[in-house]
Amino acid sequence: MTQTIAPRVRTLVLLLLAACGLLLTTAGPASAHAALTGSDPQQGVVVDKAPDQVSLTFSEKVALSDDSLRVLDPKGKAVQQGKPFEVSGTTYGVKLHSGLPDGTYTVTYQVVSADSHPVAGAFTFSIGAPSITSVSVSGDTAGGGVVGWLYGFGRYMSYAGFIVLVGGAAFVLGCWQRGAGVRPMQRLVVGGWLTLTAATLLLLLLRGSYTGSGKVGDIFDLDLLGNVLQTKAGAALVSRLLLLAAAALFISVLFGAYDKREDEEKRDLTFGLAIGGTVVAAGLAASWAMAEHASVGLQSGIAMPVDVVHLLAVATWLGGLTALLVALYRSEAPIESAAVRRFSQVAFGSVVALVATGVYQSWRQLGSWSAFTETRYGQLLLVKIGLVALLVGIAFISRRWTAQLADTVVRQGKRAPQKERVAASASGSGKSKGGDSKRAAQLARQQAAMDTARQKRTRDADPNRFGLRRSVLAEAGVAVVLLAVTTVLTQTEPGRTEQDAKAAQAASSSSSSSSSTAGSGAVTLDMSFDTGGTDGKGVVTVDFDPARVGGNEMHVYVQRTNGRAFDIPEVKVALTLEAKKIGPLAVTPDRIATGHWSASNVQIPMAGDWKVAVTVRTSDIDQTTVSKNAQIG
Image (cartoon, rainbow, N blue to C red; front, side):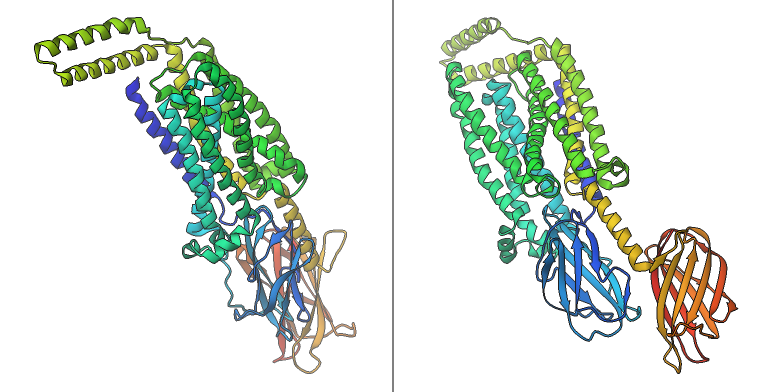
C-alpha cells in the first residue's frame, strides 16, 4: 500500500492545479462589486445642449484617481477638465469643457469599489444628434490580463496558506500534540506560513497595477506601491504581514520549546499557545474581512466578525483535514485513533459554525431566492453548497472508519532482543575483525530500516486505517475544488448588488428611451428635427404598440413646431439593437394622412434597448436623421 502514496499525492496536486486554473480563468477580468446604477446624462440619451458635467452613480462608494472618469469626443479627444470629484453619497462627477459640438461622446470609468475590487466600463450619450465615433472601448477592462491572472492566483494561494497554517497548527495543538515532533507535520505548517507570506507580498506588489493600468511593467513601480499602502486594501495586506511575524514566533515555540517539554509541562504551555494562536489566527482572518465583501453593504458591523468566524471554521476543518492526511500518509509515527476522534469532533463543530455563518452570508449577499439562479454569484454559491454537502457526506464515512479504528502499536519488547542480537553480532564482528565500526553502523541502519518497514506493514494491515486513508484523501480532493470555488466567489459581484444594479439600469433605460408609455404597453418617442432648408424644423413622433417581441403597430406623426401637421414627401424608419449587432432593420411606413404614416406587423425579433432612427425629408434635397433609444420587449 505504501507504494501507492506517491501516485495519490501527485493526483491530488494535479487536481489542485486543474481546479485552480479552470476556476481562475473562468473568473471575469473585471470582478465588479460596485455597479454603475445611473448616470447623468443617461446611457444612450440624446441631449439638446452640452452638459456642464457628467456624473455617475454606483451601488456603493468607490475610490477615484485622476483618470478614473474620462469623456471622449467622437474623435477620441478627452473633453473633461480637472479631476473627478464626489458629488454626493455614491455619485461622482467630472467637469466638461464648454461649447462642445454635436455628436456622440463616450464616457469611460475605472474605479476601485469599497471592497477593494476594480470596476471599469463605458457608455455613450449624444449632443444634438448621434454621430460616428472613432472611440473603441471593447478592451477597456479592469483586473484582466496577466496581472489579473497573477492576482487571482495570489488570492488562491493566500487562502490555501492561511488554511494550512491555521488548521495544521490547530490540529497539532488540539488533537495530536505528539505531532509537534513529527517532521512532515512541521514542514506542512511552515509551508503554510511561507505560502501565505509569499502570496501576501505578491498581492501587495500587484495591487497597484491590478487596480490601474494592468501592465506587467507597473508591478515594481514604487510610486504605485506607495499609493497602495494608503488604501484600505494595502493596509489590510500590511497588517497581514505583521501578524505573520507573530505567527512565525508561535510556530517556533510550537515546534521548538513546546515539543521538548514533558507531558505535564506541556499542559501549562498548551493554554498559552491556544490563546495566542487564536488571537493571531483571528487577526489574519480579519485582514480579509476588513477589506472585502463583509466591510461594505448591509450590516457590515455584524458581517465582519461573522466573516472572521467563517474563515476560522474553514481553516480549522480543511486545514486540519490536510494535517490528518499528512499524518496518515507521510508520518512514520502512527497517529492514535484518539487523536483522529478528537479531530472528528472539532471538524463537526467547525461544520456547524460554517453552516450558520454561511447562511447569514448568503442572505446578506443574495437578498432573494431568485438570485440563486439569476446571478453568477448565486450560481457559484450553489456549486459551493453542493461541494460542502459532498464533503460532509465523505466526512461521515470517515467518522465511521474512525469509530472502528484500532491503534497499531509495535511493542518495543519485540524489537529489543533483535537489537541486542544485532549489537552482539556487531560486537563479535568487531572483535574478530579488529572493531570494524563501519560494519556495525551499517548493520544497525539495516535493522532500523527493517523495523520501520515492519511497523508500516503492521499499521497498514489494519483495514479500518486503510479505509480512513482513502476517505480522507477523497475529502482533501473535494476540499481543493471547494477552495477554488470560494476564491472565485470572493471576486464575484454579490447577487444583491447585481440585481439592484440591473433594476436601476432598467429603470434608467426606460425613462431615457420613452417619454411616455401608454397603459397598454405602447411606447412613444418624440424627436425634434431640422433639415436645414427653408421651413425645415419640426417634431417627429413614433408610436409602437404594444412594444413587445413580435408584431407591432407603428405610427409616425410629423408636426411643425407650432403643433400643426407637417406635409412632407417622405419618412423612413430603421431599427437597430446595437448590443446584439442586429439591424438596421428598415421600415417604410405608408402615408395615411397629412403628417401621418403607419406600418403594421413591424417585427421586433428580440427584447432590448432598440435604437429608433427616423429619416425625415422635407424637400428634394433637404433631409435629416434623428434617433432615440426605446426599451422594447
